[in-house]
Each structure stands twice: as structure tokens, then as C-alpha cells.
Length: 187
Figure 1 (cartoon, rainbow, N blue to C red):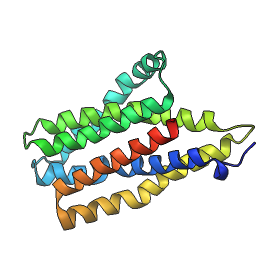
Figure 2 (tube, one colour):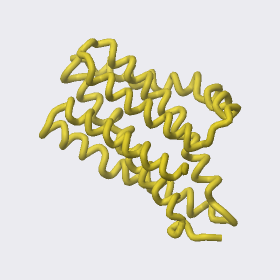
Figure 3 (spheres, helix red, strand yellow):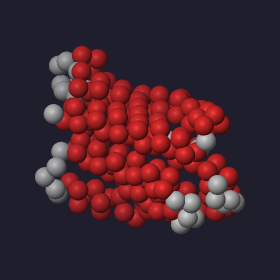
Figure 4 (cartoon, rainbow, N blue to C red):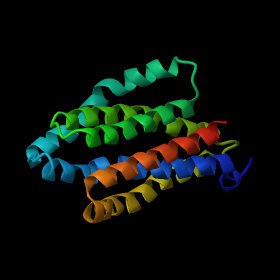
């Protein structure tokens, strides 16, 4: 069995997951600042909005995944779809100042998250060969740890220096780079 560090397509996949984690985490670190500073939501309203994410996952993730598993699509196709939906959530936030867009953006993020995470996890697990599942899954976990290490602070620094609009545009671009890497791995 090959070493995880010699599996070049998998390492590209890990790079994509670092980017995905970096972008996804903005919803739980920098986005609450946006809600507060731009839309003037209070802590309770922000908490309800973030809680909606968990509630929607609780209600719909398993039926959605079961439905998507019945489709003749690769796991990477679904991860790409989830990444695009997360990018759309940031795009929508940038398009209008309408307060309701924060709810629409959260719904797009949640659907993207519900699709991308289970299928990326599945890809990582099935990519491993001959008892190497631990190595593959460890690297997968490390990808999101790297996203945590750099995502929160980088997002805050971008907002401080360039504002919310440019920061969300950077997140859209990073999401598209993530998708491009995943397309490369798929083919």
C-alpha cells in the first residue's frame, strides 16, 4: 500500500480541504462581526441565525445525503457542489444590503456544508488502501486544523485592513480555487 504522502492527487485534495475549511470557518468567526456591524443584529439574533445552521443540519442532512448517494455522481462532484454553494453564500451577502440576505446566505452555507463534509470525509476514507485509513483520515483532520489555525485570524485581518466586501470576495475566490483543485483530482 502506498504512503499517504506519495498519493499526489490526495495531497491536492487535502489542499482543497484546507481552503474549504478556511472559507467555511468565516461563518463562525468573521460573519458574526458582519451581522453586528453591517446589519446591526444583536447577540441573540446572531445566535438564532447561527443556531439555524445546526437546526437545519439536524433536520435535513441525513435525508439529503441519502438522496444524493442514490444519484450516479462521484463523491468529489458532491464536494465541488458543496463548495460552490458556500461560495454563493458569500456572493449573495455581497450583492445586497437587504437584511433577509443573511438568512438566505446561511441557508446556502448550510446546504453546502451538509453536502461537502460527508462526501469529502467519504472520499478520504475510501481513497486509503490496505490498512492506511488512519493515515488518510489523520491528514484529512489536519487539513481542517490548518484551516482553524489560519482562517479566523486571516479573516479578521482582511476585514480590518480591507473591509467586508473585499474579504467576502477573497472567500469566493478561495472557494473557486478549491473547486478547481477538486476538479483536477476528479480527472
